Image 1 (cartoon, rainbow, N blue to C red):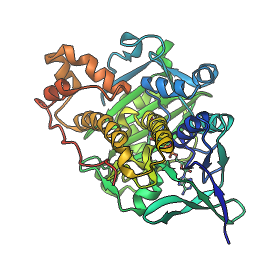
Image 2: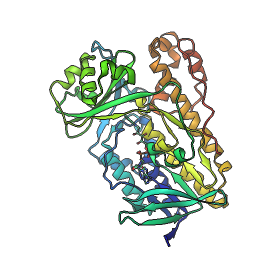
Image 3: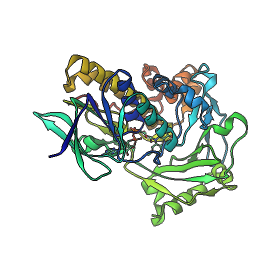
Image 4: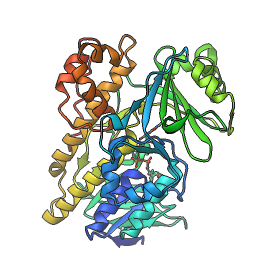
Length: 416
Ligand SMILES: Cc1cc2nc3c(=O)[nH]c(=O)nc-3n(C[C@H](O)[C@H](O)[C@H](O)COP(=O)(O)OP(=O)(O)OC[C@H]3O[C@@H](n4cnc5c(N)ncnc54)[C@H](O)[C@@H]3O)c2cc1C
């Protein structure tokens, strides 16, 4: 017979969403277990944080650790045309007070380890190299999971509620048939790491650069510590594979030639040799919950990363999921319906960000069109792009609609 362990909450996945959820629940005195397939530190893409990440990091008690860390400080974002002309950088301090006016570029292996260690320190039990194999259902409700540990043995972890934070693996989303593609956001990303490539001077040294290639493809250029740059290109698959090119390195090297700024910045450095590729880009889960199960982070939704919203949404979703689960434990009610507010609130933020992502990819649109005509809306654009995604942006999107189609909200995210 399988060994059975009982908890208040099972968390599947120990990335930002899972670590955040486990930390908050442990702080509230809940017996919470995190089941993580990998041994941390483990590699992960997604290095550029948004200013509003400050708030969940503060809730997790990590601001001082972040300030003392070796992570590069990020004060700005700039956009660069294919000819190499850079926009005036946007500095967060021109809009926000001290706390939010600077964020970080993180190596995820280190950042995610810090988050998971924090969950442990706060009292969560963490099992690494422990891979969830199945959800356990009883009378139609999820009552735990079966997971295989490093010893190859399967164990049952039972709890009245499970939070799925398995990231793009989307464990229960896929098994429930809930994973829905995004009608237009289906890009491919190819990336690598450079050592010795150029950094801009002064406080711009840590800024993110978004550099355009034809057909609204774009490079990210993210300066990390130890003289490493994370650099990748995102575009339509058709564009990146044109003339039959299939090798990620060849795709990447060809695109370097399409942007003069990227070419000159990379010229003094060299790739560390490994090239990564990912397709099937954006997706949404039809539901945020079923009885006994709640989703957070990329397991709930993954949006095109052009505006670096993923870690923010994962941390914020993890914290919110923990608060909602804590309330469920107090009420002794784990039915899906009690997570309606959770799903609605998260989707509202996701939809606001998604509208800006759609506008970004519209061939005939630029944000300058909106700000030239409606300068008073500049702050709304900045707020949404900084991660303050749950504001009323109706005036902004009414203005955007004059220049580009604004997508309808998708009918997803409510509990099953
Ligand atoms: C190309 C690209 C660029 C990106 N750039 C950025 C960026 O600049 N800024 C940003 O904020 N975001 C970015 N993102 C998004 C960011 O990576 C994610 O949104 C973020 O990692 C989500 O956190 P999470 O905790 O939901 O999932 P993850 O970080 O993926 O963590 C999920 C964890 O679950 C574990 N797991 C999976 N299946 C199982 C299982 N069966 N059993 C046990 N454990 C399991 C995994 O090992 C993993 O550790 C980018 C994404 C991509 C693809």
